Length: 223
Image (cartoon, rainbow, N blue to C red; front, side):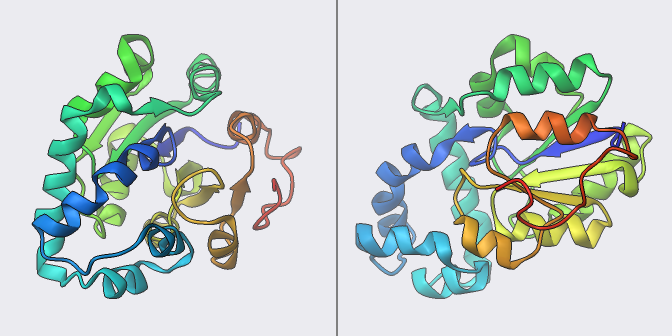
């Protein structure tokens, strides 16, 4: 198999948190004194780089931990409004059945993530590294890889944002991006990830492919 370990982001990758977050965005903006934003402009954020998003919302770096903690608390109280994307459950089962270790690295909290996954899928996850800093995932990836007894070359990190791709590269891991999350496929493809997935089922097919039979690792290959 190509990989011993697959590391998932949660929000926007495994779970459709964006639908719920849209309902909470105005409250978060008001509470933290951010720049008010209309629905149309909020949608436009999906096509922006992380720094541009912070500038658009008027977020100083020092506020990020407080905003992230607030969103974590809100998510924990609204887990009934957050659901997994179609196909996530069978994809995770396929990985686990093949002996591939699964980890979740997220800025969201473990309690909320486990609640959304449920007992069965939650038990398939070998490592939870939750509450990670929004721009501190690379260091967490390295720790997860080491704990799993794997190597960066045998690790695939999958997320839905530009910062997920950047963190995977910084940690020396393969990076996969999903087209159904927060960031638009266009801005993700511009970062040239190793894989850009258009369907959930492609993740297991890619992770389970033999090295010899694996398709060329080019950005956008799956879309």
